[in-house]
Amino acid sequence: MDGGCAGDFAGEVRRRLLCAGLFTLFLLIGAEGDRACYSGLCLIPTTDTVARKYFSFEFQVDGTVRRLAADSYIFNAQFGLTDRLEAGVDFDFSDEAEHRAYLNFKWVALEGKNEEWAVAVGVQAVDSRVRNQGPYVVTMRDFRIFRGHLGAMYVEGATHLIAGVDRGLTERLTIMADYIAGRQNYSSAGIDWIIRENVEILAGVLFPNNGEGGTRYTVHLVISGPLRFHR
Image (cartoon, rainbow, N blue to C red; front, side, top):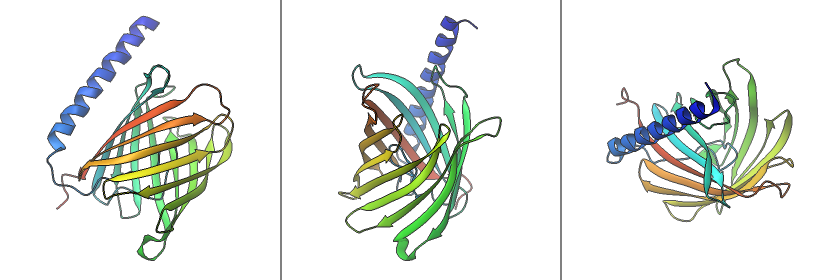
């Protein structure tokens, strides 16, 4: 397949993915479900997980702020297997994607009373050759006025510090900021807005740590709800 055909195919896949996402949103917009909840900030994972026997579908678009051009299209599907364990698969429809599908999981190993603190371990981006490309450990501490997140993640051949904070301004609006150490990585500032009980939008601006490459953005439409067999 030549470059032009590959580009046309990827574009068609993205259009179909968008249509499927909008159709899913139409079906679920009025559905009863658990309150939508992100399980990561703009850049880093947190100790939050999808509720047991619930799903979370995430339609993600990333791009450059300067031209408002999108260059990354990802569909993330997460499932709550237990109260402390979630697993899922990410489909990358970007033109430059090395692999189209990646597995991931997260386990909350320790949790304090009233969820005042927690420790989670997990792995992101396990490809078809079962290579663990992003193992991590992350902790959370609730300081009442904000939550703090601190940990370490293996990124592109090296282990980097990860850190973040988030604060709920209202029941539906949360502000956040996070950081992955390393000159090739980013820091970010973003918001999460719960539109309905099971629909939310997470959006942020990503700043390169080395000051090069330009500022980027990320937008996530998140839809959650009970699995069919859940009663």
